[in-house]
Amino acid sequence: MTEQAAPPIPARHGVAVFARRGGKVVVSLLSVAILALTWYGWNYIGDPNTGLTTTNVFADTEAHAKPLDGAVDILLVGQDSRTDAQGNPLPREVLDMLHAGVSDGELNTDTMILVHIPQNGKHAIAVSFPRDSWVELTGGFGKHKLNSAFVYAYTDTYRALQRQGMTDLRQADAQAKVAGRKNLIATLEKFIGKPGMIDRYAEVNLASFYEITKSIGGVEVCLKGPVKEAKSGVDLPGGRQTIEGVQALAFVRQRYGLPNYDLDRIARQQAFLSGLARKVISTDVLTSPGKIADLVSAVKKSVVVSQGWDLTEFAEQMRGLTGGNIEFHTIPTLGNATIGGADVLRVDPAQVAAEVTRLTSDGDTPAAPTSTQLAGAKAVTVELFDGTGSPSLAGQTHTMLQGKGFTLAPDQRLSTRTTTVVRYNPADEAALGLVKQALGGSVQAEPDRDVTAGHVRVLLGKDFRNSAAGPGGAPTSSAAKPAAPPTAPPTAATTPAAPPITAGDVPCVN
Image 1 (spheres, rainbow, N blue to C red):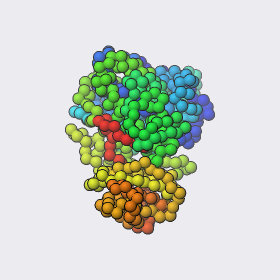
Image 2 (tube, rainbow, N blue to C red):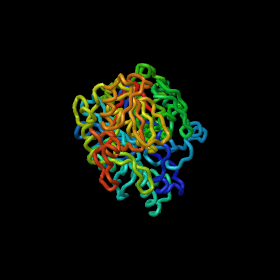
Image 3 (cartoon, rainbow, N blue to C red):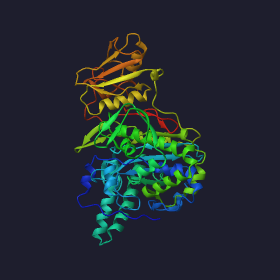
């Protein structure tokens, strides 16, 4: 089935609106259902290539049908669209139920994951790209947030077709979407320094999310604490639980109220995808023809895939993949910044390219992670109290400490304080040493018998600076080392990623 276009976007949805929008993310990357279903389910209910909506994003579909290097590299994209894959608008009552809100930027690609599957098909590496990454767009559009690569090319093409006299607005919309997808693919390939790497494309939107999660009986996730937030509609207790329908959508869409904002939302999406993959390849689903049929039907309503992708052949290639061999990562970042009035995430293209190259290097097992964990850190629980007054510094520190191997309690906020202090149980000198090593070694420490054994409390103050790197790129107090001047170029002092999420367990997330 070739793609049918959605009705044109009203005139008020110009490029400026799309570029400014900080709004909603795509549901979750239900495209993973394509992978899991083709691997295990669709062979039992008919040809998976029948009835799918496709898009011609690659100039030579034959060349992309069988990658020359034998590996499969899939770009999974999520949009906050109010239509299904065939372009049919979702009913208002459905949007209200899903807390979809006002459609004010639905062509931003707010979720982007590159999935690399080597020729042996024994494992998969999924790399997330934050939507606010500040990058050079292809197509001559300059530097913008990564999630605007699609919409700039879409809007430019749509207007050009109208100027040329095209009166069929649905056809113009369809052609503009292809241009947007191509520009997003080209932008990502330029960003990671691998032109021509991506050979598969899958796109998902809001449609059928409710039906998909309910068709398989929900997905198991774990929250570090209870959460309730009005914009997304999320209202869930802490701990392990199975979610579906409205709350599953809210779980992966929430951005406001999270310590690390969009980076925490990415971790939520990865945790949900790992659970979705685990559930779809479970005996509970695979032995139920009714669940498989319902899931296939829901996926076909909401997913667009690239032409030339033979899903039957793909199923045979991927048959040996198991949940524990699907691993999720996020590209390294350099912290938040404000550029041209927009809140963006700074990235170093060379550093990102090196990390993607490492993660996608072929072999029977993925390469060892570059971020070093401290021996013994897992036994130490860090209680992080944010008194910096910064909207992002505590979140970046939380992520860094997780990357070093510490267990993190839910973050708490304090009134703004001047100095950074580490409080520890007098019997836990070793735990104190590990935390001081991660923070740079020069922070003030105070023994405190009220601190639970095995825990360390870190009270961040205004003197704590993430831009000044201590050992291993860890943040350090400004008293220990002056921060670099504002005019200095970005350094390699990235916030290390937390240990990767896999589809073989149930990770607890913020």
